[in-house]
Image (cartoon, rainbow over all chains, first blue to last red; front, side, top):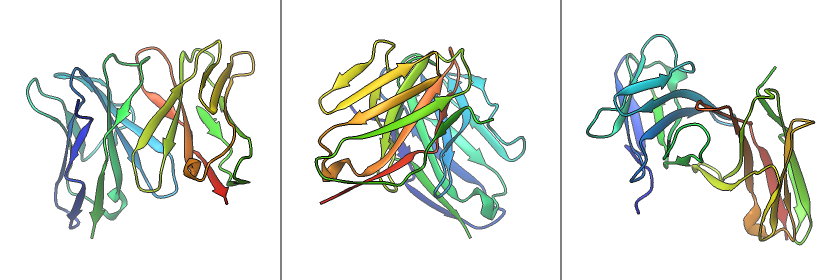
Length: 114
Length: 109
């Protein structure tokens, strides 16, 4: 049973470019969460999605960031016009039922903005 | 006030020692509680869920104190491989998890 998959594992973008991060949840999981982690800091919640629905995006910056989880295919976190402050590790987690049940994390995507 | 707070440490303990971490949460409506382990530059891995009655998994014991709004993790007979950052996570019904910033543990030979 494959775990949560994320790609790419490392992504380098120049300021102003777009970054697309992908997440495939564990088999049987239909809930996806995205987190950002800066060096020496904790995990910051960004967004919680179910298939074709954004359930909670209260942690997402209002501009430049968007997320989707289509009926088919992986969840995508999109960052437009990246800035140096976007450099961080972005983790995706999935759970079989939202909220109360354990979340399992993917290996993360390390975004570096130059 | 932060949703979840942890002592960042670091905790440096000798092999074989017993070490305990606490994590306090601010929302009394919190329903689910977890401990995760995160190694350097890796993803968090679920260590254990925390149930009202407390639970034990080998050398690890987790407890919940709803009255004082904290959860604890006890590690007995520490191993070198236990060195990591330990994150607590708390959630209310149906929504996001709140993670603490983590407690760093180093087990010394």
